[in-house]
Length: 272
Image (tube, rainbow, N blue to C red; front, side):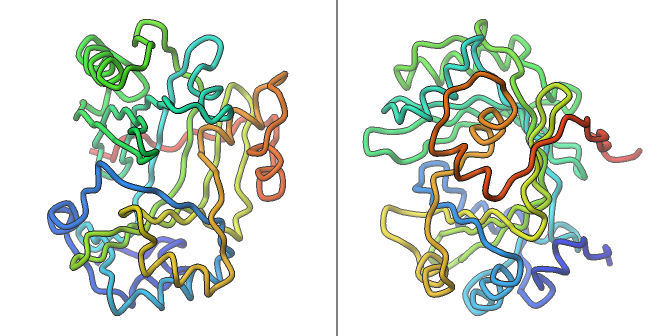
């Protein structure tokens, strides 16, 4: 059996029933969804997991119940994606490549908003060595999605803007098609600067329909309230000099610390 990661142990994931990736995707792929985010201390996050054990399965990948994520976000020279989010524009968007480190799997992902404010995610599989890049195939995919969402941005105008790293546990209610993710050990990197979430907290996201799911109601009972917090927006807000102050930065300063020491790079693909 795969040894439990520190986050899996802290959250008590061993007490949940496992589900395969195919089972989770079949029941709760949720490419078109409403996201709600919460910052939760670890002890209350464990209470959340305990409270969901009767209805939710945890994604189990051959005995491993967490996955290390690396995401490189792309933006324009003037940080158009960042500004669209901070200014709450209707046509918000994000472009990233994401690496699932232990599995050596990579995807190009584009996120936009529909007319009702729900998140629409499009994804394209890519080889692991393409992580952090937008090659011709990825660029064509990005252009098609953004054009279809009436976003006046092209892949040619984008370059890597920040990298986000974290460890994720994914829970799914297979009967109702909703998901909950818990992200710990979260760090944001830009150049030689790093911002890190307080290690005693996790970022919880519920992903489902327009109406709050049972997980949202449980979070409210645990004293949590939804926050408007994007990992990429936090990273840019804290690490890029000269950006205007904003609500995201004020919230992030409560839970994140920024340093000028570069963090060591983890292995980006599994050992052969």
